[in-house]
Length: 463
Image 1 (cartoon, rainbow, N blue to C red):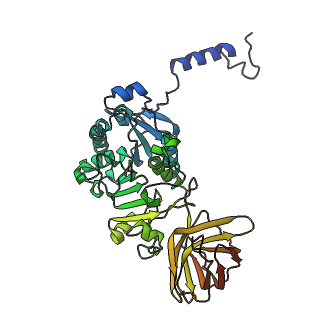
Image 2: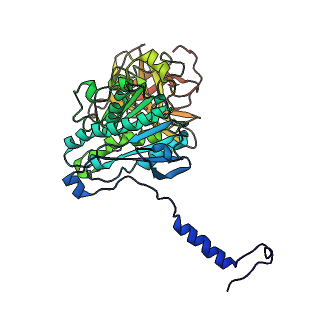
Image 3: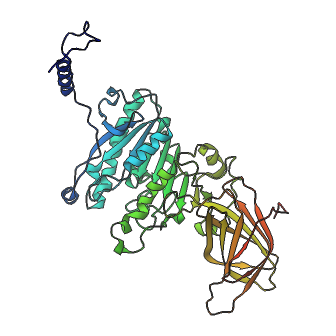
């Protein structure tokens, strides 16, 4: 039964139940705006192929989880596209089965949490889906032409291309390059996440991504021995774990589809993780991955006041780095899963064995609450009398307080007699923080036997 409120009796002109019915009827005429998602295709599209269709889905801090479809003809008719904000395009790659990328929303959320931008997802699933990979490669030019036309409209609106950032995954990296080349490299930044290698390796710069395509081009390599591009193609190229096999990814085909896509896809998850400023992915400029692991490229203060380049959106001093470094390759290692960052120490060991000793070292840093471990065993190192041996220790986590250190020396020789390594001086210098170095003097290591001790302040700062 309808009723009247005492409080508003004089103002009310209709019963509340009738008023509610009118409101609901009005809302039915203007339904909530539909959230757009990346096109979801299936196996029949993969077999038959699909013609290119580019959809641009806008996300902002006001609609982080709800994509709005932009008009190619008049993108600024949508008030949510704010021309005063920078614009970031996120471009996926090859989709052989037609399914949307599982990582797309993670990239959008991370991008918007870091900076207030127009985050535009470039949905070209119709064109990226086909079992015949070369057909999809041909379509990348069409997608780039579509984006070029869109950027031209942005230019006419007065938007500076230097405020545009393109994040391209696999084939999306080369689409970013083709688009940037149309504007003679005036786009602000391109982030290439494991740029596709097949059909692009060995091609001239006009047919792939290269440093001239934007003011700054950064590339991350994670699968260069399969789906990724091996050689440098940016101003700064980051090679995670050497750029090929990623820790935690399957090693045999019996693991199913993850065997094929895990290494390649890891580039995206590393990019998402790079937004965590407390867990930076620091790249060390070096001639090769083996030189990096051997501890030959550990000094970053020679490159810039900010040190070595950090992969991801926190790298803002890139102009300074380009002046110092030019085009360069950098290396870092990661854990198997998030948080991926590792903590690096320079380890200097001075021994006094009368005869040279060969072997590897395992180091544990400990406090009552936790432990961090680094195995320096990628090869056998030579320890000579009164000769300093420098190693790179990559710990799986950071310890702000280290109470004890455990060392283990191993030669890997099962049948040979057990050797001793007489350590005259040991120094551990943190590379990723301003913590003080830790030292220890006169330590006797028996092969395959843990020796635990408390670190002490270093007596000689030059050692």
